[in-house]
Image 1 (cartoon, rainbow, N blue to C red):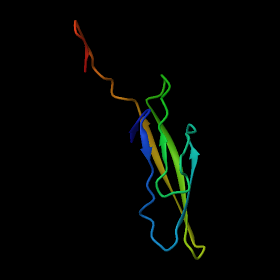
Image 2: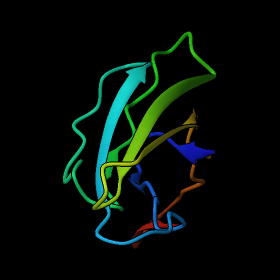
Image 3: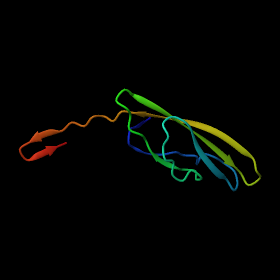
Image 4: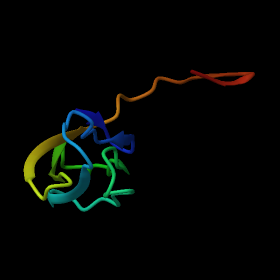
Length: 97
């Protein structure tokens, strides 16, 4: 679970084998810009939720291939939730968190 508009790193480092290559892809949910999708740890920014949405699921697939051509695939679901609202107090000196 992550908050909206948060930097997220996916993690495929638990894969074992020799000469591994990685291929991440998004399979459902609001499309995000997945950076470095051919690494074990790609990144993206979670989307801002619509006013009507309390949460949103993003599903990613990881395909790992070793140097002998053997391949395995797994999926992960990332649930995006609303940011906790910050509380600010207006004072004569300005705004304090």
